[in-house]
Length: 395
Ligand SMILES: Nc1nc2c(ncn2[C@@H]2O[C@H](COP(=O)(O)OP(=O)(O)OP(=O)(O)O)[C@@H](O)[C@H]2O)c(=O)[nH]1
Ligand SMILES: [Mg+2]
Image (cartoon, rainbow, N blue to C red; front, top):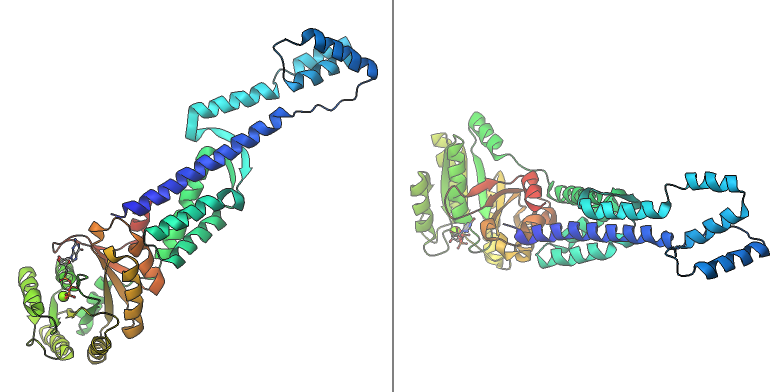
């Protein structure tokens, strides 16, 4: 599930770690080459020095620092010379190279000197991430929000060791994703409990385009409520498609739930209405209303859906979207939301969705919570959607 997004996020963490520690190494080595020990010399000193250099040319020491040290020694007294030798034991050059080799050995957990992350350091890798997110069907506004949020978090952060970069980036991504998924959710169990107390059944209407999994999802949600100790009834309000009533009847029998149905072609609002009356009469807490799949562009069918809403006044309208359709699912959700004002989303076929873009984007784009994910074809294959779970999945 969502392998593509997972890969992209972990790739970004790795790339940023590599790049920032490479920059760090480059910065560390750069000043070593020019450790100019500025000291003024008399012409005699220079002459002596040049002679010495001629004699000692093939000697092993070629570091520029040596020159300064030697000339310094020449210009001072013997006592000072000895003092300096003692003082100079922790040579900056050898210390630097020691540090580098330690880093190579201990990898992720090694120490490097402090560096502050700048926008320039991370811009190209974040741009790459943005493109990768779009490829995984993440909506543009969501990809932009992630990039901006991560950038804001990282810029100005001080890196003390290589592992900091991975930690900062993971935290920044987690925060960005949590914010995106942080739409306030609805607690269906609590609503069912409330319905039990008031005797007014909780009415849930399922809408969406053709074949997204509405009918199957209703059987799953019926199972969910049964498992929680509530008794649902189902309204066969897809009176449009051939075989739809038989299909839901089959599911209702399998899960052991009463189905309220009329004949094919009947008014779906009337079927839904009857189901609500049945639930009230029998003290059932939940009514699940199946509706026909319809394209968001089909004006007549969209009007019919509005009519069901007017008549039944559902407490919750659930948009059922197919995760595999990526951006289309998000766009269609937006159209259904415009038409009937959706309260929550169920994203089906997440089990087969390698991309994950729709799951990440859909709630944010229409500002409605994902309530459940469909994760298979059996009645138990549904899970309550928790943003923390998704964040853990992705990072
Ligand atoms: N893998 C997988 N398949 C699913 C899931 N949910 C539904 N399906 C399958 O999707 C297909 C369509 O499901 P339906 O429930 O008939 O879809 P629908 O939205 O009611 O379709 P229409 O009534 O024609 O609009 C079926 O083969 C289901 O088994 C899911 O979460 N995972
Ligand atoms: Mg159906």
